[in-house]
Image (tube, rainbow, N blue to C red):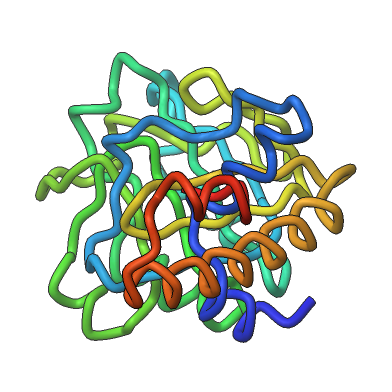
Length: 217
C-alpha cells in the first residue's frame, strides 16, 4: 500500500464516511487523542500495545516490557497504546528514545491513549505522535508494558494487529483489515466527487443541486 500517496490524498472524515457506508459505525478513537503537531498525518498497520500499573517491576530492568514491545514493532506499523485508566493521567508512556527506536524499526507513528513526554525532542524527530496530553513523569514505578501484538480496546473501538490506522487533525480512525481495500477505494472515490463539487460551488452552484448530483456534503 502506498502510504505516502494515500496520506496526501485522504483525510479521516472521508475514511469515516466510507466505514459508515459499510455499516461500521464504531471506528473513531476518543476525540481528545490529538497530534502533537496539527500537520501530522499518520497511516499504517496497527500494532497494539497495553500498559498497566507497575505491580512488581523488575528492579534490575524496570523498562523490560517497554523494551520488548518497541523492539518487536514491525515495519509500516502505527503503534496503538492503550493505557489502563488508573494510570492514564499519572505517567508518560512514550518519549524521545522510544520514538527514535520505533522510527528505526520502520514504524510510521504512534497513537497513545495516555500521556507522552520529551515533546520538543519528538517534534524535532518529525515522528507522528498522537496523544491525550503531556507530563514529565516517567513510566518507571508507575506503569509497565504488559502486552504487545495483541487486541486492545481504545475508548469503545477494538484495534487488532493489521487493522488500518489513519489519523490527522480531525481524529484517528480504525479500519478493520477485512474491509481495508474497499474502504480505501470508497474514500478515494468520495475525495474525487468532493473535488468536483467544490469546483462547482466556487462557480456559484447551490448546495441542494450539488447534493442531488454528487451526494456529498
